[in-house]
Image (cartoon, rainbow, N blue to C red; front, side, top):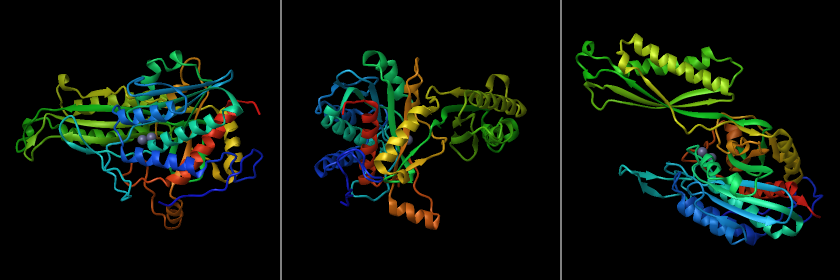
Length: 435
Ligand SMILES: [Zn+2]
Ligand SMILES: [Zn+2]
């Protein structure tokens, strides 16, 4: 296995490009083994049982007080080290229903059976295995350097980020009342567009509001040869899909970011039978609640009025269901983000710390900061793209595999090292430094 060796020095005041946080080769080997284990054994959202048990044992082995099965499969680990600030570091645990196609020797071959009996491959295609490995690596660094700080660290392994429900479940289970309340919340997410060895950050809104919507378009089914005697929900759905595109392009201000994508459409089973309904699944992305509500209102208006135009009876109007998987904007506290970005520059060099732009992706980490009273929170990007692949893509314009792609393959060695370095530095900066 190819490994990175980096030059580290042991004390602060380090020159640009060198880190004050030393990761010995023995330490790295532990993390590499953990990463490979997690990558080879992915579990879907709400089923992160073995993953959670591994997180619990890693953290309890370091002396953290561990609570398991918190908000589902969640793990909360607390390490108290005297008076001082409390910081929370979060990693998410769930993988995706994706068949890995990286061809790597450690590629996932996990195949589960769904509740309706279908085989379903599973893959860590969103890098949550990296997030967990970095969190454990950070915990290990903070434990060995506990003479350098005082305060309390809370590490949480969160279920079901991909469904947008895990953070909410942990908060509702009493994360901020049953454990010390954090002064700061921290997290990272791997980036599929930033090369390994670098980090990206955004001060302010960083990730979008995400809504999932189901639309059921009703019609009156019948024989495909007698269209005049039916009300065809397939033709109506086609009109709806097209008309929905005008919400972003014609109704919203061009200065407001928004996305409306129809990700799934299903209706009918046979060539010559017009079905009586079509089901659609949409994702909506926005950055303000005004835009979010405007989009939802427009979807209801367009579906209903196109159904009326198609002659659908009043008792069969389309149904628009907004799922409770809603994920709010992830807002990075600007003061905290700028403070940490300066720390990152000192650790890995200014050239390796990139100010990024907000994206329309979503992250339920945002919920941890939006409790009352608010907790200053930041989530930043950890570059994960193989550096040779990145260079090639810059030259030939070939797109890089995105997050959730079956081809997504972090250059994990340097990614993990950089992740542990910057997260540990952030934590040490926020905890009371007693040097
Ligand atoms: Zn994801
Ligand atoms: Zn993710």
